[in-house]
Image: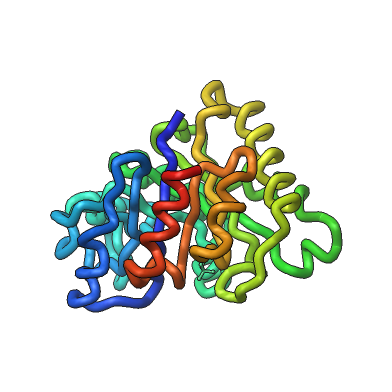
Length: 239
Ligand code: 13P
């Protein structure tokens, strides 16, 4: 079983001076990761937290202006990468097949991929959340996935950056469903980490971490400042 993981996603925020926020976040009991803009990865490599990228190309190199490959992230000092974040899916039209290819590239480069899935508000309202989750799981996770190189992040699109959080019952339902699907497909499916993401704050972290099969969080806005992210890391360590 993986150690619990408190993961931050800085999205398109942060300059080198902001890396000072990461200096005191390490914790003896849980893993702490921050997925940084690519420009900051090399500068952050010696800080006492793990560093991740936020996306990678599916190819190792080539004529793809503006893209970054998984070996490049690893070379800069990253050990993780997010794949299939909903903002990549919506801003850049990434499909489940794209996400699977990127994840496979991450594995080949020795990175742990955090594959992001989650439903929109329309899907939630239509009552088809678990069907959508099934489709995303089946098509976004490549066969190269193991509990060692892959983590799933359940991030309902409607909870990202909105201050809205699903009920603990809703989180429990989806996380148990993800766990069951992983166990059906992978021999080590019971051991994959499954994060929750979407408006996680210090004030709601403890109740989210108490939900079965939640092994950590993927945190956006509240990961930018140590004063906000530190208490979330502490809540995970106490859970
Ligand atoms: P917020 O924590 O800002 O809602 O963002 C969640 C997210 O998208 C993390 O990847």
